[in-house]
Length: 58
Image (cartoon, rainbow, N blue to C red):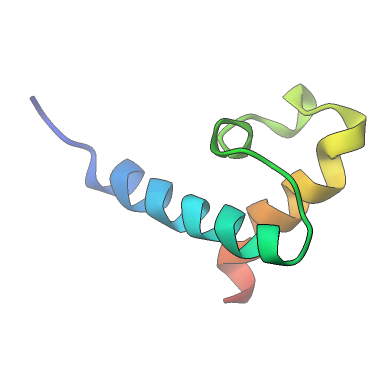
């Protein structure tokens, strides 16, 4: 079985972003992080964006 190492690493980064964001009262789940912006409910979009941008600010 071939492992896509980039996908594997991104899973950990996004999971860390979610855990960090929970401290800051941002609510999202790991499965939402991998969704496209158009697939996110309007109520969740701000939290989704904060987690999505986490890797660019840390």
